[in-house]
Image 1 (cartoon, rainbow, N blue to C red):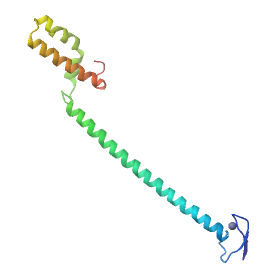
Image 2 (cartoon, rainbow, N blue to C red; image 1 turned 135 degrees about the vertical axis):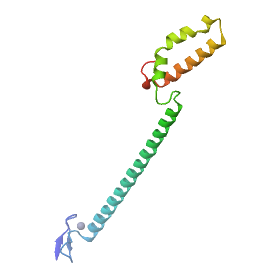
Image 3 (cartoon, helix red, strand yellow; image 1 turned 135 degrees about the horizontal axis):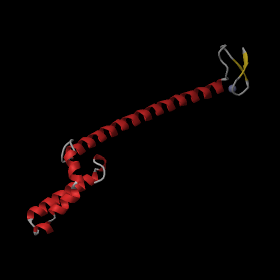
Length: 130
Ligand SMILES: [Zn+2]
């Protein structure tokens, strides 16, 4: 049967009733369809790669979180830490080496308290203002 191509408008001989494009237009149409499939595949793999990257990052975050918890000087129970931080100013003024004739014990405790204060300042989310 004789038909008009839906793409280019030229007349062509269709040997099957479902053919609506001339052979040239059909080839172009088929190529476009294949390219579309490839793009779908690309998108799929990009999505897969992104998902794997997210999983990788999530496990890294988990690992860092557990390392951070391991490094906490009072473990998960931070109530003692909180108390120390709250009373830090008083403690530091009480144990100041100047008030104890520069004693080694006073110096040691001051250094220890300053260390706690510094660690607490690095994790402000755990106990509010230091
Ligand atoms: Zn055509």
